[in-house]
Image 1 (cartoon, each protein chain N blue to C red):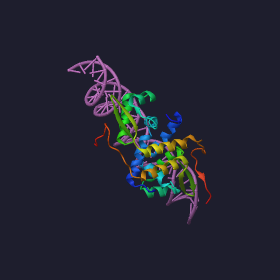
Image 2: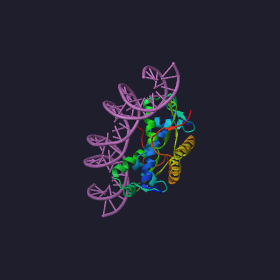
Image 3: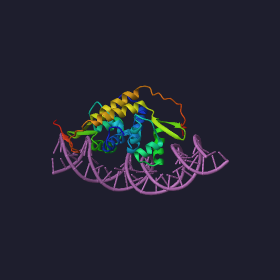
Image 4: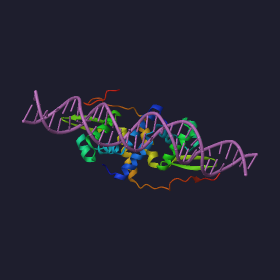
Length: 111
Length: 111
DNA sequence: TCAACGCATGAGCACATGTTCATGTGTCGG
DNA sequence: CCGACACATGAACATGTGCTCATGCGTTGA
């Protein structure tokens, strides 16, 4: 365990858990650089309004995103710089080629 | 969506999902800088051998960790530099104080 | 005031997931 | 070869989670 307290581990895990759902990750990614209304997100990602709202609620509660009323509409944006930077970092790394040795199989190391 | 393909979004979400479980995150964090055997991880984190092995299997299958036999024991280490760097980055950011502006229309009342 | 728009929320269901218990597989000492 | 050690794996169960359907709430325009 590095320099993270138990509570911090829980918090980080919670953020990862929320970003671990494809639709939710897409929502967050779509708001990585821009601000979008709920309707925009629905249309862009092809999700139902209800589902989008449910996901946004989770992201809001976790302080990952923030909502702002604009008349009848509500605009969402990322509200956590750690998450934003972390995502940018992850994206940058993931764009590079991903090389790997084959699955399973426990390698041998001499004794 | 930024510069990530649909398949990449799925992959990133999968990594986040696996890191989104506290015990699994603890396992990965414990192997962030060092190599540990299954027994070490069990003892350090206070998890049952079976549970630890199940989690390690998931992390192995997802190419996040790698196993190496050392006699009777099996040592695990992180096998994905993206994940390692991403985690280090996240940790570094999470250690800093977490500020949050609480203005705004839609707010969540605690439950 | 009223209807329509835009979004939020609760209920409910099918399915995924974390955990434990029991058992299987590979390895070393004697 | 045999027993013990270290780990992997399957089954089973309780709980969590994503999704849809229906409905509620706030806002704007007429």
